[in-house]
Length: 233
Image (tube, rainbow, N blue to C red; front, side):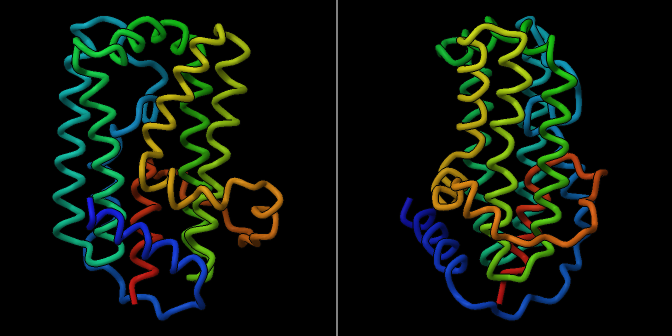
């Protein structure tokens, strides 16, 4: 816990301090990480989620495999800030997966209850996540001192997008569940580091370049690691 807090404090300091020199290019292929991490989020690579216990069990295994693969990449190919970012993010995502896949938890029961309606807007949910990943990739190209703020501002748009998608087709309790999923994904990393960048007016002051983000990326973790690697001094 102390190590996690130290990493988060470091990220907060980096966001508020002058730019530093970026680290040399990582020798590991970032696409390898993206392939590993593709299934970490629901709706990240597909328009539906499992509705039955049997299908969910299989999906949970693939998600936990994705977490293991991603963590191995982070350990093998990242250092310091990037590794801290990756490990905290993966800790939070792993907790979400384990609780959703544990049949004894209320969270699991809520998931089974709301999955059918979420699937009605699955394509929109998927688009929300894909757009967020691409937008965060754009943020990874900002000047070092703006990268954390930029990534936070881009991620903060995800809840609004999902709310628009789910709220128009599902009852309020399903929307509340969807927001809870996103809150769990944000976890201690994005939930704490990004708390100061949820102000839309503050986010308007960040100037991104005109190039689109990489639309081929399939995981939020990929641009997060790119942000962390760029901040490594």
